[in-house]
Image 1 (cartoon, rainbow, N blue to C red):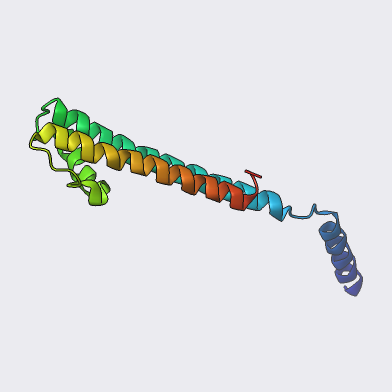
Image 2: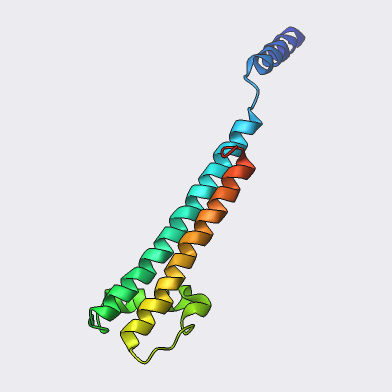
Length: 125
């Protein structure tokens, strides 16, 4: 019985020795690359929602429509402090300028964060 245990332990030790070592640098690069892509796509989605809101307001879309109300509710939160940054008298111009600036903000911030994450991961070096 002891012979089988020793043989099994020897085989297990040899199997461990034959395994390829984990390349932690590559793993870090992949994880940071994934996070950078996630940040970039999230920023793009936020900017798209804001642009859709601008299009709906300028085009005088039906506010009772489910899509328009969904986009409008999300756009309000995503506009951050830009919602009433400028206050021209024309409502459509106000939405265009303020929500347009918020969309540009999300694109710039997500792009910068993605670049920083890629540099941390070593992919941008």
